[in-house]
Image (cartoon, rainbow, N blue to C red):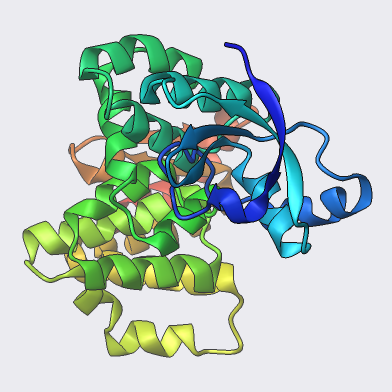
Length: 310
């Protein structure tokens, strides 16, 4: 592709056109200090249009130059006859070879290419370039990400929201999504803790037909959130415990009883483990002893504690 270089007035640039924009969020603020110091080293690419020049790539550089009060800048200019798909390909190649894409930008890339290519071609050609295997699952996930609200997108970009949970949140109504996002920010939830709390809230939604928004608005949880004596991890643990206890009261009762028994058994070098979630009626008993005499001495106390399971 041959370009011509022109010193263009920024007033001729069509900044309202985002047809080929693949950046999220806008990168202008990150470039201002650099451009103010040394100027634009790599000229942006634009395409001739009847009403001015359409940005193909380099929007952040152009936005930064405008904020700095520049009147003109050197641009690589494409003739008007260059088609949209070629322009998008140029924008894609420049970005992926110089800085790469964050998750939101990868979703944006898929959305943009779907305007010009069939699903199968995007899956086969574009997904591998973005670091995904060419499977429909990844394609569908990236498509769903584009439907998230701005707050969720921002948390994804800053790697504060678990991507797997982000997609599942779309099954919830807006109020519940907002409440969960607020919880993530207030308590700085790790990806694993997000998954645990999300799964409990999803069970509330399906089994008890209570929305996550309502579940998180309970007096007990609200009280925990404003408790200044607790740090964020402690609050997260207590909220997780409350949700679990109310959803599975019998299971939680058994778990607490086992915890008490194990505290006493640990004095004898013994640990009792149930099947996952107490699903099966069998147990694993781990014992540490030097010889048979020591085991015979410990055994009566062990049996006494085990009888508490009945």
